[in-house]
Image 1 (cartoon, rainbow, N blue to C red):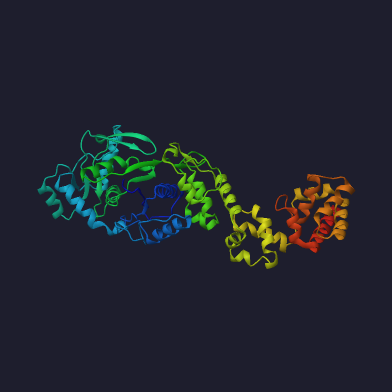
Image 2 (image 1 turned 180 degrees about the horizontal axis):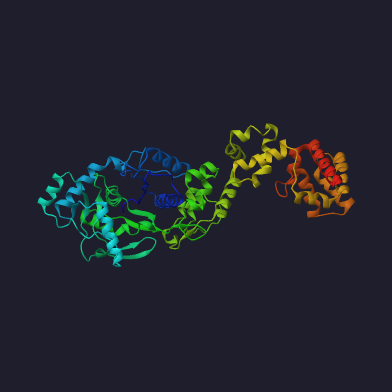
Length: 472
């Protein structure tokens, strides 16, 4: 049996968004599960739109996510080069073969002429496709146009009334009729290979066995199958993933937010959180907990990929981020917080601070609020928080202060005394204490807060709360 090979072939025209990231991840998981190869191929034939910086960023983003390729840029492989801009000589040999067999022909039609044809076809209720204007040009006519300096595109000559059938790895049996397609461009007028052509050629030459990509490419598949069959090249198995949609049911885009891998990285998302989220977009796992990349691969099954659209859910992404933060060691949390935050935390309370605030953090920047609360500022209270203090009353804080003077930072004894003297319990006991100490209604365990504040600062905050209550 041949080795399983998958690939990810992005165009370096921008940052990798979630849809492309999921296709890359699913391809890598499938290859990893089968102990095969995952190939990274840079599709940069569109020189006008491709930029080297995006090719470099996408490689960094994939590595950050934990996705590594066995063949591709920076990795020696048997099918180099892995940059399509360096493979034009290969494509030219196949163009020549198609032309010699009358399976491709030069097209001199301008964009304006093509646009007019499309407009006429649509007005007649016909599907827009190339009408074959240049198909009948004689060699002499072609030579004359070339002599005039005209530069033709190259079109693939689609056979008439040919059934194109294949079984999609995700969507099941697919049927297309070649007569509905029309002759399509495989080489642009400036001489560069079209995506349709070089993508198919490289999959065959690099011995790719399985292609997982977005369903927006489904209409490309019959065209690529015809190219490969015309050249007697092997065809991969294709699987088309449903699109990721926003809350409004439309394809995820910039209007829904910023969802490139690079953005998620810069916002402080942990790679294992993003992995677990992406792996479950259209794919189900029995294990509902945080899983490693290896575990995600071991339990990945093509038949578990849903045909239905995957809905982006920010809350689910945040869920996996929280799970990932809780799974970090204390040292890993410290590194994740970064130097700016590290410099604000006294060394002697570092471990206690991490233990206390970790359950309340999704992102490093959120630690700044707790640093300010614990180490710096005099607390400010909202009207709702002032109402909580006032409802507790002056006697509540008088007992707190007196008990604090007697028991120091032993919060258990302080709370026990409050219970016995004032007969309060539950929320009426804990909430005023929390608000007085932190200016927040939710947060770390009170015992940990008191340990971080120490007796002196704890007493200062009880006194501040008492003064506010008396003042009102």
